[in-house]
Length: 441
Length: 188
Image: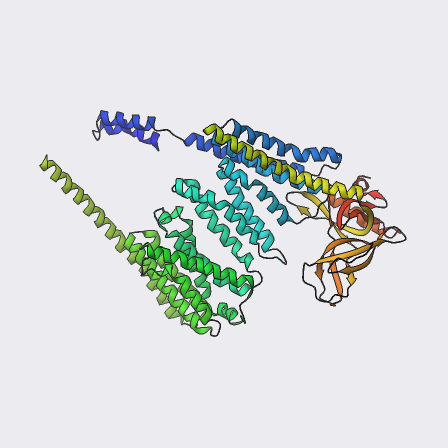
């Protein structure tokens, strides 16, 4: 980016867009600015290298070298671990660069896993996979903080998710409560990242990975009360949407704000599913609420309401934006659904329509084509879903599609025109201002 | 200031490094203790061949000892089953009784996992815990085949697992076909 700009400078000077002085100043500015790019790239490759070597060693050990004696195999188990520890100790003692710390930390992470695996192999310890993962992850948590390592934090959340899936979704699984502890252990690190580098790429990666990890694992908590899965996900997505609207995240670009995007998209997908009647038939079958699952959903609900109230106090809630409140409405609807399956189905369809219109309005207000078309897609999807389970005549279905299609064209066209005239206005305004300045001079 | 901080970080790291070394070391000591002080039992078994992504190839052992009649009737899936055993006249492990809780008896026991008791509330099916035997990756499948071949010859009960047991903890030391270690048997 910078070098590209510097290359353009002679041309700009030649065409008298800027003077030679300004060109020199710009060049000097970019040269004096400390560039961290090569360093960062080096870190990424260092970490990737460590991960590959670590995984490679794991695989080599997994060959089960049964020609070697038990003592030699035991030695094998400890060698990578000790090497990893020495390198990490070295980078801490000599206060080496972040690249050193990230790479050595990632290697040590896999060395810990490999050594435990090797020992269980030597002694044929059956122990289940989830427990093995848990011990491994816990032994590496402190490294995240000691090395201030992003790579280790990423590995932590990925492996914790794998642990939760293995523990919870497996046959006869139980709720992986310890996953919550593992997530909490990462929390201080994440908060620090949000505070110190809110717009950094690595922070955005966590803004996506954390909600994704929760989306993947939530279902495993409800394995014994599957009828609650729908409700819990609606609340989770509502929580994510409102989290994404917190001042900290709302200032970010959409692609940096995983909470908002996942929350909104997840809500729409779930509502589309709930616009079919059969989903409510399942709800009808619930006889009573009890157990840890109900408590978990309740805690989730309280958390989501809490965030919403906070947004209200900060005056961050747009009263006409249904996305903020949809999880509350759906929770109420869920209780209506306990005794009736027709009303919730109809209401869900209406809600989806409103959400679509809502998104279109937000898109127009913010001049954002992505959001505008998102709204149109919601409405299209809704109509599409109704094609499967209603007996509308083909003519009406056809007309509906034509109608929405025309809607796509018209709204996009109108907005394009609006944007152009706005740009023109801005240009004129700037021109007028410049003229005024000239006159004043 | 910076130096002091990095010293603390280093000290903390030493603590963690020791913990990281302690976990596998402690596993080794625990297993060695059972191997040296425990009593050896032979469990009749059949090997089958799956794999584990981190720990490599192993053969799963399906034991002949997998069910028992129990006086307890209410069991939950994956519940612990205390399986009490003794040595029979041929030197193989023989089931004495099963229970939900430890019983006061001289017999050795292992803690198995309940599989089901659907068909009959008093008949309990369980999995013995030492059901994995790690092998060099090229040998796991041949081991299964070798077992099948050995099964076809005239001698009955020719495949068994050698398991050391001490205070309810068990270590699977080896699997033998016709008194030959399965790893060597495959090579022959």
